[in-house]
Amino acid sequence: MDFDTSSYLRRSAGRAKSDVANKLVGMLLHEASRLRANATGLKVSDLAYGNAVVATFGTKCIYCERELERNRAAVEHLEGMNRFRVGLHVPGNVAVACVICNREKRRDDQLKDLVLADSGWKSFLSHDSRSCSVSCKSCAYWASIWPDQDKRVERLSAIIAKITKFRESYAGVLTLAPLVKQQMRREVERLYRECQDFASAHIGKIANLLQNSEI
Ligand SMILES: [Zn+2]
Ligand SMILES: [Zn+2]
Image (cartoon, rainbow, N blue to C red; front, side, top):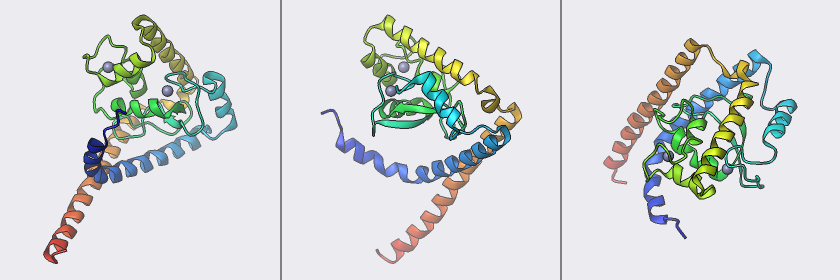
């Protein structure tokens, strides 16, 4: 067993407030996705899109290529729907991954600045032990799947090529005008910030009241 219950419990306290801000960011990005789908006439829920995902990736995780299992699969946003990646729920950005890859990829998704690649999904697949320090958890993850370095480099670059090609078919939906993209990033960041400030101010006020009434 390598599960660390005590550190899991310790980390839980810090999350609550940012979860709310992240939720709002997700709502905003879903709304933007809806507008994008209306403008392009392409939706993730279209039968044709589901068929295209199956034709490209079959019933395997798009990253590690292991067979997907019921209850062990997650809807995957290649470019994460968070304030750093500003990905949308639109064709070309949505597929299915195993829950392990979905979780492992968060390390890259939550980096403000990526160093290995220009997108979250590509960065995740670029941890081939050639650029990171020996303590990199993402490199260790891929090494656990393909222990042989040459094989690992070959598989990861083949998967990057496959996903790149898949996304090219949806360039019309995925490519936002640079100015629109910039504005989206700004608004998402602002929403996140304002939500955090709102929560801090109000919770602080209520905490004071509670303290004064000697809860
Ligand atoms: Zn996987
Ligand atoms: Zn790495």
